[in-house]
Length: 262
Image (cartoon, rainbow, N blue to C red; front, side, top):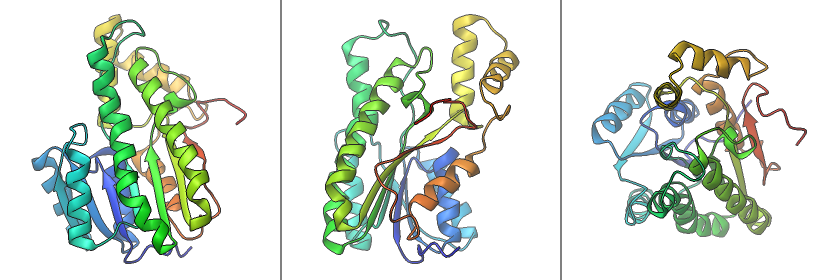
């Protein structure tokens, strides 16, 4: 299938590793012009080198999207370098673990800056241009936590739901201008983040690492973890020209783990 992404300017946030990096690889295969963002300069340069080895045109931006000036820095750099953003993939690392009553307001504020503010500010920076040009794609990487709250991830459960509400509202407002807005909800996926959550669970409960992963697999009808490439494939399809009539959706890529009708 021809996805129509050649020469589109695609911004992928948090793209030095995991699902977002896999998405960047697939966008590169579609001959998109890539901009990738990470707060870690070393891992960002390594990711850029791997993408360039695939023949991709890549602009790396070192920026911390959890900081007030992070999104503005990215917006300015992209517009100066490329003049536009056709596809925006929002993504950041996850917030700290903890119970519903276990965080002070500083932690809640930090999680909001990380997950919600970054998504809002980046869309505010790029979506007006998409509307003017009559074409654009916004895809937010969220989590299965939106549909199935995960124990000890109250910040993620809450703030990713807020991101979903923002994007769903935005989708209705910009659909007639040729801009689609969707979110992708990964389930238990074999990434570095899942390794971090496993370690936090081991520390909290005393369970073994193997038993933690076995439980996640048992909670998934597919009886295995997902791969970053499987989630990335959904992201890239939603960015494509053929996906132009799909908007306002929260697409689970979770091996059936959410177990909901809608």
